[in-house]
Length: 260
Image 1 (cartoon, rainbow, N blue to C red):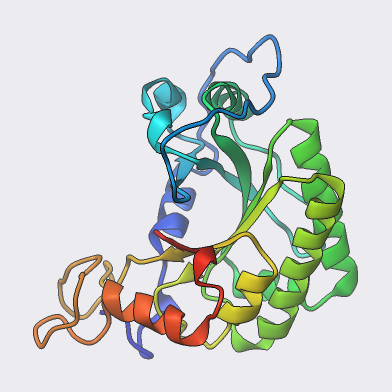
Image 2 (cartoon, rainbow, N blue to C red):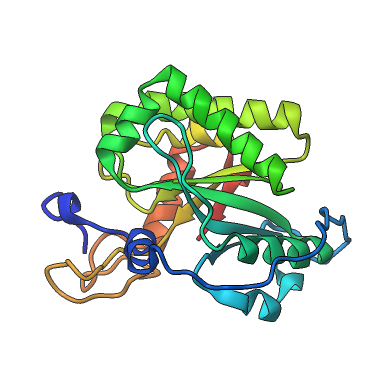
């Protein structure tokens, strides 16, 4: 189980896998044309949001697109000045985009940063935030995508207000310049650092992707379930149900919650 003692050393599974595969190159032929989003009537009545890591190769050929509404390519790095790293295995993104669009699935790009100092430098600079918004918009337009998913993990409390300002600026800019675009942010199962204003983030985005996992991790003091459904005397207070109730308590925009 995570605790105030262990969170300083905590690495979420997104970060662990990103670093494990960083620099991994997979050669996939680029598609010859761009297929825009096709609006298709499907039986889904909820947002079903998936992530597609850059190291998954051509697994996009085997996805059940009829069960997805959104898919985010994971990921591009967002730097402290608002500049972006290169998109890893970009031809995989382009093929995923075409197949997903053909099946009526919205495709976004995940922008990640796992370093607290870098997150703080970016979010606490108005110029960097503006630069980040512009660069993400240009990337989305250049690759005919449909929006952005933000993934800043374990930021400190010092960025709580500026994180909300960034998400507000990002969402407003995209909604104004790309109507129908989708902006979301990955949020924690437990907000250990009091860094996320759930209510305001939900108001200024299209969705909070709640990361209901990593309740126990490789650095925990003892082994336990990654995603315990209920609180118990055996596994402790924190669980998926605890997280859901916590979000409901602190957030009034419940239609924006995406259980991940």
